[in-house]
Image (cartoon, rainbow, N blue to C red; front, side, top):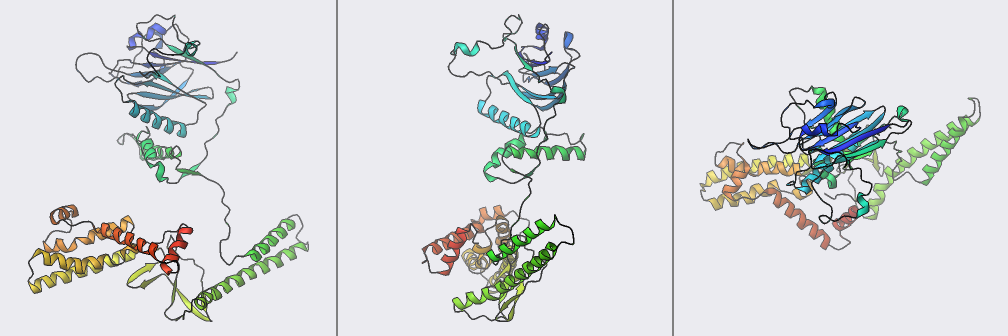
Length: 510
């Protein structure tokens, strides 16, 4: 005999009216407008032993009844877990045998802001659907809304709608019952495990991800009653809402390929030959002559790799210098590897120019600007801040020596000595927000010392009183002016060539 899961949605208008539908065959009942705002969780009649999930009604005034209130109850055949609960919705997960159903009971007040309500409901649904494994999801209740014009609907829409019109109740709403036929193999059904994901930030979906995290029931925890482990696991599950915001990537095996410039078609052919020999040798015994061919091909392949790499290191710099008529002083020339991590490989790399070695360094100074392998600009920002503070000390000594008390003279010395020192070539290395914050800290150092203010004085207060703008505005202006100058240059100019080539490769020039 097939099994059914009977779910009833009803606006009862007072929990005491629950007995009016006791004659119906229910497994799950989702009640709205219970009007109960106390912690009393007792049910009338035969429903006293049922499992429940409550959301209290809201009572803002001392007189009159409460507004709203939600209740979801189920019989002993189902296992109930509350996933989300608010004053407008309750989402529960009910498991019967091995069949999992998520049921959402909704009640929207007539005065509710429907746009905000839909956004909150969407965030809750996205969080639940991406964090919970289930077979069926059902959402029902009293939305206090109409589709289309009032009292206008096609007759066939309500032809087979399951309204329990023969039930006489004290409520002005009819119960709506949904019968769900369970599959025959429900006893052996096991939900598929969710795939593993790792986060990957997507700026275009940041607002949706923020809303998903904000409305997640797993984030709202009682820190006094929850253990550290519970808080950790709840937060980890909550962050998985990033799946709905497309901030995830599946774990998969990546096949890395050699991207070295010197790895040409000859190297690829030798590598393919070694792979083919190994494939054939796996089906032979250790005494087969094919193994000798494999080891010989492998030695030739690695010898070719070393030769290609060495030739590239020897000839590439020489070709470039000869083509551009450049004379290289190997004693002063340095090679700086630029990587995002800033870490160099442990393997020793040697570069030769006409038989003479060129040193590989981790940092260098060019035109007074320190460059490092990470190209992050942190060292340059620290050096600029240090020089600006030295310049501020020189300005203070000049003011004291010349006995200059006028405000224009002080601002002129500041603009001539401190500001240029702080922003020197900052358009190249200082466009990162963290570096600009460092520059802002050193920007007002002179005025804090001039007025004998503590270092912890808020910068905004000084800017308001002295009418001084942010130093970051000057840096960004200089950067924009430099970009405009590059775009106006002829195609033969080196800055324009570098900028055009970097744009084609999607590389940030600065």
